[in-house]
Image 1 (spheres, one colour):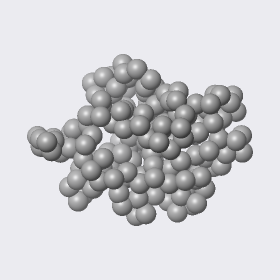
Image 2 (cartoon, helix red, strand yellow):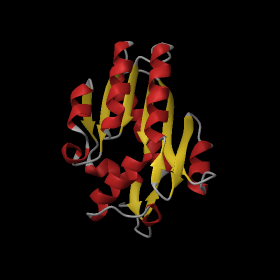
Image 3 (cartoon, one colour):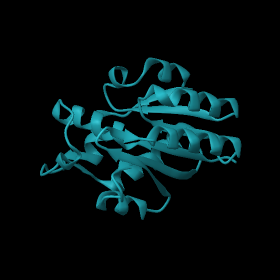
Length: 182
């Protein structure tokens, strides 16, 4: 199929986005995500980087037992598939394996020929390489400064890397209570 999919590691997005905005990792409650703007950006990036229509945006996050209101709101957006791992006292579990499983399954089934992955975690490298073995081109997306927050081996495995511009990130992510720029 001549389609592309976007895979978003929400933990990476919020952690590195808060470092970009505030200089330190903040709690998610201190951040405000504009769903419409980020989904529009992913749609535009898919076309810019691949020239292909978007199949779907896969959004990977953690939850304690049920999705929080922001996750529920995102899950009801068209073309978004919310995938949740478990969050407990020891941290988040299963998110990377969900992303890898979906990426490889779509590649095996030839449902996509391009993947855009927003993450920096080296745990994804084996899945990226397996998807590539099935013919999928993998573009790695990063939050500035991506060289400092993405595993080198993951970057080397990707077919391409696109660091989001700081202005792009500030367009869809803001400190809670802060007003977006005009």
